[in-house]
Length: 475
Image (cartoon, rainbow, N blue to C red; front, side):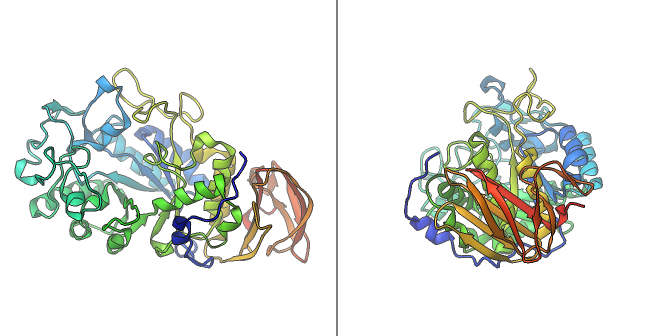
């Protein structure tokens, strides 16, 4: 794609504030999170054992496990899982036993399990219905769980929906697209939510991604977290637009926050601007409190981000995310969709099919060679600072990470030929993990020799990269 020579926008200027020396978390720990969106529990368990664990992934983020509405009439859309009707661990991805077995399998493989926790609301259906596991419900009635008094009734907009995102009261007390909004300031509601989260913790879960966090006051989330039976990692969905009164910083006392602007900025720079702008890329949020990503299940449906549909450009953007020392990186693993509502590959009963990578619509971006191999790069360079930055003022950039790694990104429209690059790496022969797999001291792709002064010579094709790191040293 031809890039446009555009000046950096005000949004970019607002987010390029973090110094290049920022680091995400204490070195030595694996922190890459892979989002296996809508994968069923047996498939997650198998992926932890066969791929995530061996590749050095720190955590797997799984879809909501609680009982949800059933909308076969709409083709079992992905969003039905975000409309709970009870806290039974029984969904189209599997029952309680299958979920527990998945958690055990992932933890045995050294992979932590983070659950999508939908605690802001219940269902958005205005007529009585029956949930996946047989629970009866109505919009404000969930027998044995919640009754009318447990919900907000903001009374502002006729149907109680949020209309004005610049009004804090509406955002946190009215309904998000008709979803029955829980009264999270109520102690009985807090106890019920905490009971659900503690049930998951009892099965070995390590933490939670709090869905729709900005629609709950930060103090309410903090009060619920205080009721947890043991420590858990928490990261929160805190979308933000300029001028809104609710900002991600408010939620830092509860845990980490997801930085949505990061993906928007990455896409804009790779698509329209200059890679040289990435020299100070980051956010005003502390690096060790930020979860960063190119795309997620919401933004890939209609937002200006890079997705699997962008092919090589998407792979290169993820390579940068994994090489750059800002935030905890989360990788998306999704499925093909033709409409924004389309759900995962499912059988006639609406049960999610086993995820077999690169077939039946499963895209498995985390298994793409560039992305999966850059997980190893990320783990090798953790705790080091950026050095040896060089750029051509446009779309060719290079930088090192301590004496552990070196990345070349060429997003120019033509190849770079016969160029010498100076790295911080010790002398030796290194596998280019962009184009080859490294195992047992051997590389299936190109090998570059770094001399005693840190130099190596290479050609770099247009829209391509080279990545070398200390843990992929040949011989």
